Image 1 (cartoon, rainbow, N blue to C red):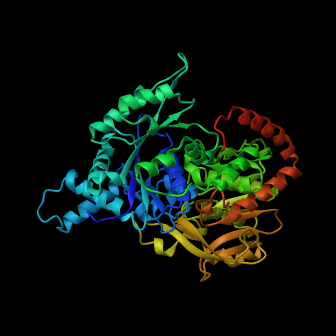
Image 2 (image 1 turned 90 degrees about the vertical axis):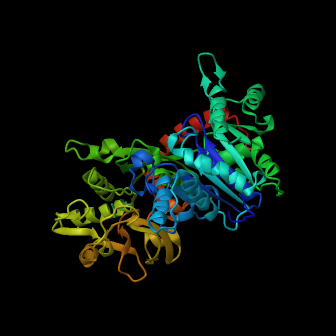
Length: 565
Ligand code: GLN
């Protein structure tokens, strides 16, 4: 294997899924980066899909798009929000991608007559993918998706075991994240599931160096001692990861426990102490928010927060910037389609309306109704990707007098395709990784909401779409008052639309949520929330919320045990 100076931290999970491995890995990354180290994170996902691009957000959560156009796991969003890195294609590999590459090599005859097997060929491929992400780094953190013991994650677990032997055990660290459940009836924390999970890992030949124990309650020393004894991990390497109210407190909480100090000690590295002033300020801001506004999110994946992960975070970030808590009210667009529906019942108390990205027919007319409601009632409106396309359709139908306006995505035979398939998409039949993906430049017009937000004319944002604003309708729609506030530099693609005589109404073809961070909220989100706060004040909603927000804030401050140090 190629020589490298990079050290590796492998993060595995045990007991149950959804333990927050991504946040834990990102928080550890943030701490190490703040110690002055060059750090990156990679996610290895055991499912067979080549990437999550073809998976429903209901099953898999949001598809996070990297600047270089990879459709990846939503954990990469956490990595970018917690570290100062920009992830790329090499930061996420799946079983499907690994097998795809091995099978292509086999077809090219590169294995010279060998029988191609899981060990060594698949494991070698996994190891080379890890190595590819380790360029110019002090530390690469590798998060293994799934739970130890799953059949499908076995080749990854075996590969990271071999990896330790290949690069020298002094250069790798295995961190295992587990759950310590609390049994209410007996009022006890239970360490047994952790013992079993570590036993499984040791069966596969991996002795974890650090255990990170998720718990709702303080982990007493005697439980740590017990875990240490049964799992063969020193007590000083058994760490508590207690639930906190905001994910942005996790780096501080883990630092408070001493995990970053332990990591550099075990990896035999020397670094400065981390500078966590910015994180502390951020968390202080988050916990001191008193005002609150409610934003209606009109979509079809309404039951699962993970489906709109970056979007939820971007809205929260904009709230921090505006000193205001942002509450999301998820509205199922299909429900709005019923004739009998009273829109006021759904939107009362909502200071802004957001229609996010999406695909397919379901719930489309309900979203269009929500946009019309926002436009006609002067409620701040923000449409992202599909949300922008629907804003164009709504405008065409109800303002520009084109009642049959539609997108070819929902009606391939529409007589008025104001949104149509992009020309480069016409010959494409495969679904995976074939959209217009990744970052593209956009030029902004002055005197627009967009220009007020960005304060500059050239921006760069990430895309993921097949359909576009049909330029044949540009003149007609603009004559009726639609404003094209952003376009590709050659002026061929419409990237942003707005309407005049409205407090704030903007749609963009790209996904700005992917570039927002808690410390640097995205300018469009910031202005959308600012406009929503104004609307809420005008409607006298802020006051109503303030008392609720400050009440819950008081209880939160009282019950929050983890000190911000
Ligand atoms: N379905 C639309 C398209 O493919 C919008 C995509 C999206 O919202 N990401 O163009």
